[in-house]
Image 1 (cartoon, helix red, strand yellow):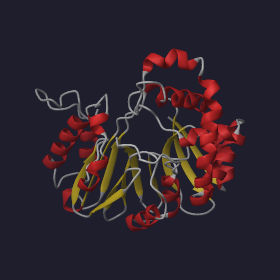
Image 2: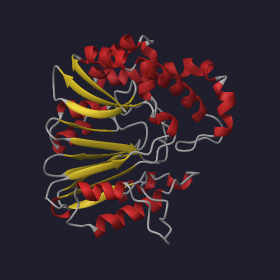
Image 3: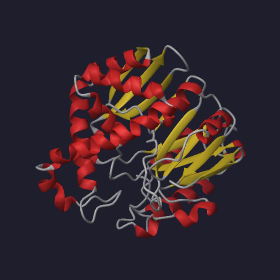
Image 4: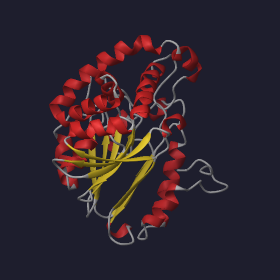
Length: 331
């Protein structure tokens, strides 16, 4: 994984980012348009694009670029309203990578089609040292893995933070800032909104890491912005506790945990959100229920002893031999 240190204004840091990852950003932007077109082919859905269409789509996806770019411009209005620094960052990336700004914007409103990540957290008496801990096993599409980048971001305003991101992304899956605030996120399979309209893409973690130092501040910020376009789960920890935020296009539910553990595998957990659950519509269940079952068992078995070693054990787990979880676990 390439490691980059960025310093300055968001525009200046974006330019440094673009210059350092020029080749990967250009390639990933191209792949983004391809994946967006593939996702709209008959029989496709998030987590399960119809790969039978891959070859014909490869030769025709460029014709659909204007459609995705027009959608990106609609999202841009929301980003400017809630997080203008993200726009400056993207404009800097475009200059540094020597590609059109619209391509960077389009890249940042998209998401990967196949993603089966697992997240979990523990705090208080559930941990070995009474310190909160959150973890994430990132299970990315193989062809996307080469674009993962580690960024050490030192802005001229706000907190320093470190994250991993796809090349050209300013919306991160996970990271931590200088105040010890840690974040991780993944997709949830939910029913679509009744009314289709542009909603801010998942760029909130950039602002959270740059401006927040506590779980309470993150919750306050989340409450100030509209729901996301896709079902999303966030795990956020400060020095005392962690919070799980489950988001559907219609509603969010917050759960703050000072003592205990939680785990998520792309399935809604909150009772309040079950009417928005779309898991039964998913063609490929991706072992989500088996992963959740195994994760819950491991968290319970290690209650009161959870630390970095236990986190690593869970992340590398292949399931229990002789059970339905074998080879269908987090790893």
